[in-house]
Amino acid sequence: MMKQLSVKDNSSYAKEYFADIPRLTRKIDSKTLEQLEHEGVFVFPELVADAEDITKDQMILQRVGDCYRTQNVMGFIGYGDERLVLTSRFSDENSDFFLQYMLEQVLDFPNIVDLSTSADQDDRLFHMLLFLFPYYLKQAVRKGLFKTYIRRKYNDSNVKGIIDIPRHIDRNTPFVGKVAYNKREYSYDNYLMELIRHTIEFIKKKPYGKKILARVKNEVQLVVDATQDYALFDKRSIIEKNTRNVVRHAYYREYRSLQHLCLLILQQQKHNIGSGARQIYGILFDGAWLWEEYVNQLISDKFYHPRNKGREGAQRLFACGVGLIYPDFIGREQSPRLIADAKYKPTDNIGGKDYLQLLAYMLRFDAKTGYYLYPDSQSTGDVKLMLNEGVKYENNVKAREDICVIKHGLRIPDTANSYDDFVIAIKKSESAFRELFHSTT
Image (cartoon, rainbow, N blue to C red):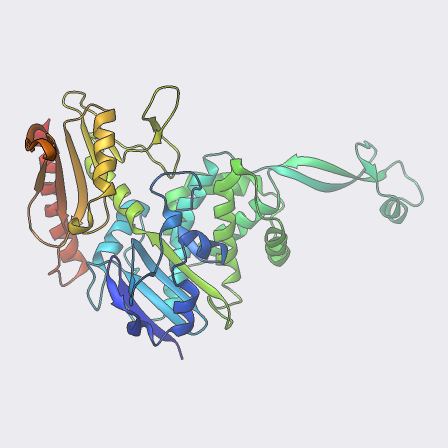
């Protein structure tokens, strides 16, 4: 019988709370997402080794004294017959509308996903794998179709490879002018593209498959055109080839993630997710990344958005290329320039290094105002922090009038009775959230 427990992000729980899932708790205790990904957990978005503010250092459960503290991680993870569901801190006992809404806005997920209900979690986990497929396919195809050397067999008079003597004797006796030979060729129709094609054909058979693939219609057609050797009965051998030949070239890292996802989808047909007493499994979403991408949709008309996890828009603190930084948002207006940092955590948890980071960005871009953009569970209004000047030893400390940091929250509805009601309410919150930046410039 499955033992299931639910926790919320950025919350603290006594160790006794996890008594019903002891093996899973030990398995994930203070482990980073990078470690869990290596053990088979699917982490979204993919981990980037040299980016700032990185997903890989996040933990599901961080031990703090006699308690465990959750971080910016949502989704679910299991080990044998034990499962832990991680919801947003804005969820209730029956639903997690906010996570569902962010997934829909950022990844175009169908709104049939609900992590927090007690229905068949295996089905939900599998559906989420399918819904992620268009995103990863699009990211991979942006690099062009994957190509590699493959070994083809020929039997003709135009010999351009290594003669296969046993096959030649078998097929060309008596000799009729043809020679059997093998040739290595650079081809798009290879083991990985065939795996992607099998995944596409599998999704097509699902009731909602056409809707999922409609978002990547052009990419799907490119894969279909490239895989002329596709055959349904080859699926098992294709899976085995990809299991043995993991994509390792750094240039094709998007294809490595897509390969992992395709294997999870296709292998689900024969094996229940999480089957086996010693197998760890699950899908984990980086809430900070989801929140940042969601905020970008709201304010992209006023801010540039460097992407650290996509290695796009890198800035430097110093001349000569020293001091790599990735501010979340840089104002498009030069005077006054605005800097904003998306933080998926409660306002009371924003401090310390967060302040230093934002102030460094403000100094670099000569900005007088910086913003922390966070999801707010209460209508507390903005908090304006004026930068001090002076030295305590000289008894002349006072607030400056020209440099400030503002904590600006997006109100997350908490009284919605249905997802449709939640969408209506959060649209109003979004309008109020954007109004500040339209009135500033």
